[in-house]
Image (cartoon, rainbow, N blue to C red):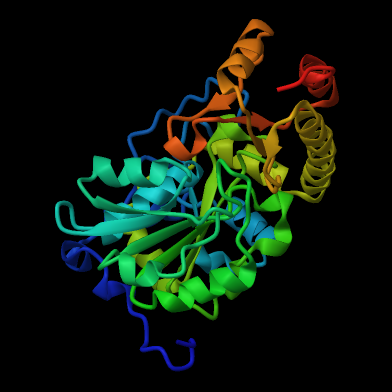
Length: 353
């Protein structure tokens, strides 16, 4: 079904019914005002920090931050919500569209665990489908998701590091015209050619998730973004917290999105990719089955994963193992700097799996 022949998509038909008549909480910043003496928010007049205005509540959606991400992403500012990492954006979507005990989401494993966990915490069921052997979308998935309101696709996929072609993602969006298709692009800076953010104006049921935790080196700041059409943005803004972006986070994030910050990010991404290639080569030489890496990590499968895990523990190297049956013999290695990469490579060099 092409976007030209599909029935008009109205996210209000998917939203929790009680939200349609909800009057959202009007925080002091959302109400706004003009004046020199601000006594409308029960704030302290004393700033005990070197950070300006930290004694005041921040804007719900800081304009400087939203505009900076708009310029970076090429998505209109009105189509962007800043959140506490992409994790909060996942929860916001579930809270906005899924009725607890009634509705469901769908996702494709092995993948990021928070889609299912976030759904479970809101008593929303999960249709968990499997990616193919090559970690692509299964052919019959549209008929298998039932009435799932939200379909989550992680691209590049965590933890496999594999990617789904942009054309296949677009076909997936078309194949679920009555659901919200969420493409999680947390690692997209490592393979920007796979982004579908430019399709937002074509497909009103598309949502793209982004974060500054990975390529921008701001995992501790917790700043993510939801990119979506106006109607979805308006509905999500009904349930978002009054002040989701702390002032220090907003300032850090805005600086990271400056011209200098973007240059730093791109330089560091190139460094991580280079070190990741070195690590992948070493793991392959050791005898591991190494999946193609499209994020800042590589998944490697070992004949004797227990001995490899013990070797890492003895060397004080903390990598990620998984309980998923398809990944029982795998370890995920995040890319790091040259010095640490040298240490990891030395651990495997000259050995056989």
